[in-house]
Length: 286
Ligand code: 3HC
Image (cartoon, rainbow, N blue to C red):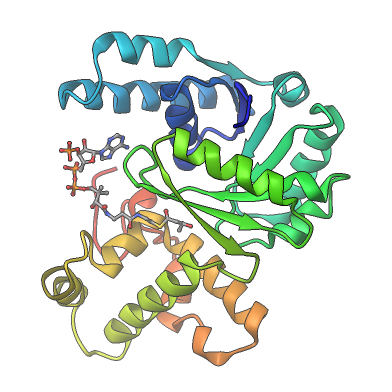
């Protein structure tokens, strides 16, 4: 069993604050790293709100909420945040150059035996591992939104990931109350290789006039018992993120079955990215 007690989570956005939330709730001390004070405060507020929701639903007590919040410390200095942790989980935007810059710095300052994990949804684990001096201690730890609710952690081994590191991350995922599933590093891993073609096909149904968005979603919700229809889910994930992942699949496999629907491209060009911009296939209050 791993003796890791201190974790740094890099990025306090939707995924990062959810990841910090579940680590802290499971007893880990968490450094939550953001670039600006207001972003760090926003992340802490979101965590507090989500914990209050859990108190209201009687899943945790007020005391557990307070203890969880006390275990999270916001940090603006990446080097300081990672200098004494056993695990770093990166959850910054899905851009290779940004992640490369961050992992280069983390690698320089984190203890030699610390495990470096990325929550990337599509960028190659092997390629990210190669920017560090420790590809054997580098791994994918892919959480799902909303992190406090979704049970899965997809644990992705890069080409050089040590088996002991995979085991440690599997154990830690269980400690978080999650169910880890192991996958090897190929484009989209398992989750997005299966999910994104379904979302893309739902978009083609709208593009080709097969049915309206609401009807497409109702078919999948009422006929297949999906909690959200694929177009509602695409808005929830972000249409820009969906497009990025489809492009990774398309480029990675060179197979036209992954070609992004032109309607998806057009909506991203128009800035209709889903929940975060107030409009995607459906409209939202922002
Ligand atoms: N924190 C804590 N609890 C939360 C929460 C949060 N952020 N969001 C929701 N909850 C809890 C609610 O309190 C509620 O608890 P209860 O069961 O005790 O009442 C429960 O989750 C359900 O929430 P709601 O009642 O508010 O709403 P719904 O019943 O409509 O469920 C949903 C919302 C959980 C989001 C559900 O619609 C769902 O499961 N949707 C599918 C989500 C999904 O597929 N996510 C994966 C996206 S893909 C991804 O992340 C990977 C990336 O690589 C693309």
